[in-house]
Every structure is written in structure tokens, then in C-alpha cells.
Image 1 (cartoon, rainbow, N blue to C red):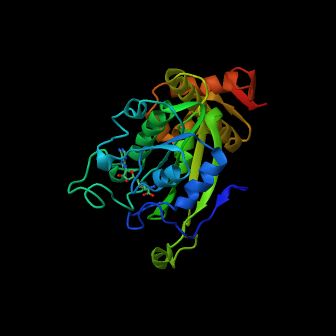
Image 2: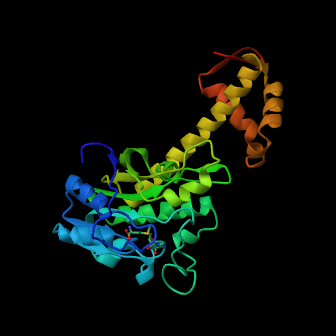
Length: 296
Ligand SMILES: C[S@@+](CC[C@H](N)C(=O)[O-])C[C@H]1O[C@@H](n2cnc3c(N)ncnc32)[C@H](O)[C@@H]1O
């Protein structure tokens, strides 16, 4: 693997071509050749493509899946396989485009089947749980990650890869690869009227496990999310100050924000404190006259 784009039109002899949403075994082979894991786990193994490739390459491999009783939202991977491994890579079902329980396997939909999430938010929250579980089964210095695509429906583009990256600490992200998807011609027909291209790629998100404990890791996620929220308040105040010509009375700033972002305010009863905090401590504003703020 020399670049960050992987494109394999053939799927090879591994796994099963009749397993919907299966992945080319050549993708796993290229990843294993590059990362060189001695041990590997696929906790959403589907038809077993990755496991067969790993075994062929002499890598100790553990395949788990909801279809054979392992539920990544309830069961600990590390306890199930009884060891930490060098690489834990899943290929998650996203968007509900392909349904697994009750269609690909089993007679009933399973409530924890990731292909049967209620909505995008439900999926992204569950994927965060799955990734934390995968991380815990990864050796320190080893890699964990997922193969996921984006999805557009009803004119709305859902970027699952961006959502997953934003729900994990920045300093563990090690690589984002593009995986070209082939044999999607028939689906493309219904997209003829679209101005934007049909999505023909997935992402391989790779994170490197650092030394910190799961609790420290979760704390890092919470701190990053709080920073992002503060950043949003900073952007709101800046946008309004630009609209108001770079100078405004505090009451006018409140009023303009109230008119422009009613949803955001409904969720935060302390919204006026947030605005004052940005004006006072972001370093972006100064006040020469009581109650009047200017862009610095
Ligand atoms: C995209 S498929 C994997 C395909 C695989 N890479 C292959 O080539 O055959 C996703 C798999 O995730 C499994 N899955 C869905 N929800 C799960 C859960 N909660 N725990 C474990 N596996 C789950 C599904 O049963 C399905 O087999």
C-alpha cells in the first residue's frame, strides 16, 4: 500500500459474494501487509472475509458477529477473545441500506443490529460505544478502526465517517483511507437526475491506541466536546457582531442572538452567561463604554 486510496475491483476468493455489503479481501490483505498485525479481531465479521485473509497470512484471527451471538453493544470483545490484539477492525453496517438481522440472517430483526438503528444519531452514538469496545481489545500501540461510508437520502448527506471521527479523541486518529466501491452500477441509475455524484467510496478509519485508560480516554472525548460547544458560542457571537457592524450594546447582542438562534437558546437556560463569557474572555472583544462591545 503506497497511497491512501485503495481500489480493488475484484473481491477475491475470501468470504462470500452473496453476503450483502461484503468487502473485497484484497482490502484486508493490503491493510495487513502494511500494519503487520500478529493478532487481529473483526467484531462484525459478516461472511468472514477478513478472518479468512488473516488466517491465510498466518495472523491469529478472531471473528465475532451478532449473527453468531456476539453483540458489540453489550459484550466485551477483550473478555470474549480473552486477550488484547494488534488490530481490531470492523466493517459496520450503516444507513440501513442493507439490513442484516431478519434479512441476511435470522428470522427476526435484532434490536441491537447496527443496520436497524432508529436514525443517524442513534447509529453514531452506538458506533461510539462499538469503537470504545474495540479500543479496549487493542494492545497499547496497536490499531483499531472501522470501514464506513457516507450516505445521501432525500437530499441530505450524512457523513458517518466525520461523525465517528468527531466522537473519538483527536490524538488517537492515525489514518483515513479511501476505499473505492465497485459493482454499484445498477444503484447509480436512480441517481441520474442528481447534480452531485453518487457515492462510490467508503472510508477506512484507523486509530492508534495510546497508553491512557478507558476512563481517561472518555474524559478526553468529553473535554473535546465541551471545547467544540464553546467554539460554537464564539462563532455565534462573532457572526452577530459582524452583522451589527463590529460594535453593539450588550442588550442588542442578546436580542439579535435570540432572534437568530432560538433553538440553541431553548437548550441552554444560561445563554446570556455564555454570551458574556465570550465577550469577556475570548480576547476577541473589548469595551470602552459600559455595556458596549467592539470587535478587537
Ligand atoms: C457490512 S457487514 C460485514 C461484512 C464483512 N466485512 C464481509 O466481508 O463479509 C456488517 C456486519 O455487522 C454485523 N452486526 C450488526 N450489528 C452488530 C452488533 N451489534 N454486534 C456485532 N455485529 C453486528 C452484521 O450482522 C453484519 O454481518
